[in-house]
Image (tube, rainbow, N blue to C red; front, side):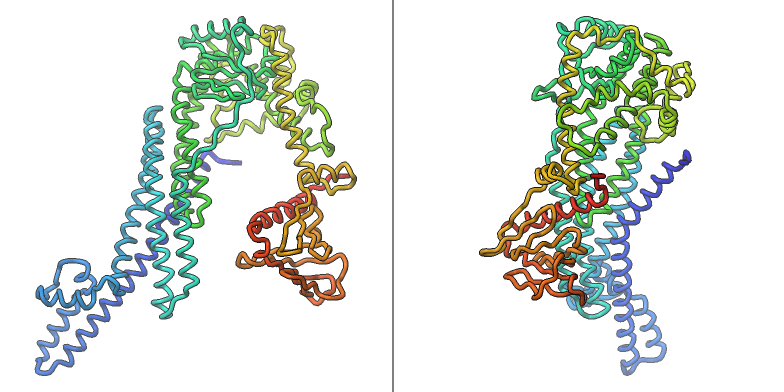
Length: 635
């Protein structure tokens, strides 16, 4: 069981990981370069003292004094600053010309030490800024908005500076570690480090300019006032009682929630601006009018509190930030920067969700004042129960092993089974499981909301609240409710059937012609020209070679791509060949002394421009076979 301090402990661990990875490379370069520079200084002093010892005509006292004076001399300090350390200006200039040239080793290590120190300081400041801006987000809505806007732009700049600085340090270190200790360097290591650094920098920079994908259109229909005058009248009355302006549009859908928004919403090619109220038609059928009024009053209270205005301003920026994090996560060596971005995002999320829970309780209080605590609490129980059971029902329908030829009947399944579910021991267990708090929860626990309303329903009586039939619902005041709901369910079920059918294509072995038809619909034979006169075909059964033999997925033990030029397959064959396969670009050898275990090598270059497409399809079809064998249907 989680303890109240566990989220703080997780945040502390995230901070430590971010700090360690962000500072590790510059710290290593600083230690290494400082150690090497100290060696240069020691060697210079040792050579100078040896010359003093060998100088003729000096007294013992003069030699000792000369040794002591040169013992405190730092060649590095003279190269890095204007301080001559007792030398004349002319002597210092000659010394710098001999020892401190730009391409000299001493100057390179000196520059690396300075750059690593600056990167260390910059990294520490970035960590402190992330903590400070995160703390600012706990103040209020305006401070949270300022925190995110500043944090978003600042961390963008930090991420670019960090990957450039650490990329330079990484490439430099990959050369000098081996050059210093082994007096040679490996071109391959330097090339790998250089390519990785350039790729990381490019991907982080590209992430700044990537367009954020548009949100999926909302599955809903607008209810015009002429189509639902009674509902519109009630919503306006509730808005006036709360002291806020009513929504510009009421949108009806079939999702298991109610919400309000001031952000632009897209619905089937139409764009809705300004205040929107989304109502769930299935839930409106479950709630009586007073319970629905309490829920609607709660949602409208978010308008009055400025919650929707704040979300509309902040939401797109949060989406951009998360999209940028996804782009950074794909860069090969940007993990330290990614952890810094996640650190701030996690702290901000704590603040954002804490305030969201507080605003929910405020909206609850206003709804209870307008209607009754009992109405709101019973509505919350019904909404929660419907959402949980709908998830169970849809997962059960999705697990079906046969294709749906007609309607799936999701709404009917939920309507027929909700009462039995509410009376089952599983229901109490599901409701109890949702009582464990988490700092990322956007809504308070049901128990906390009941306590705030001053109305408590024991857990064992939740089922009674869910199964109590409403005397009158708001759907009865919406003449088009049934038709709208039918259209929305039909659209939703079409997507459900499509996803289910594709899932079956992964699950089927196949065992009969009907199952084979579904598998071939999503995984048809894919022929690829392999040089002149040869074709390799990827099928759901395996890879068909030019001589007609099949490398079956069931016998494929390992597939390796070597230098992006060869695909090496270790596999068994259904029938052993009398002679090893020797076709142009395809060769097979007996790999392990067994007549049925073979290594087949395929020259990828002969696919020409289709090489990448072949590799992608090969991986997809092999994955399908692995999924099928793990989750094969009973048929």
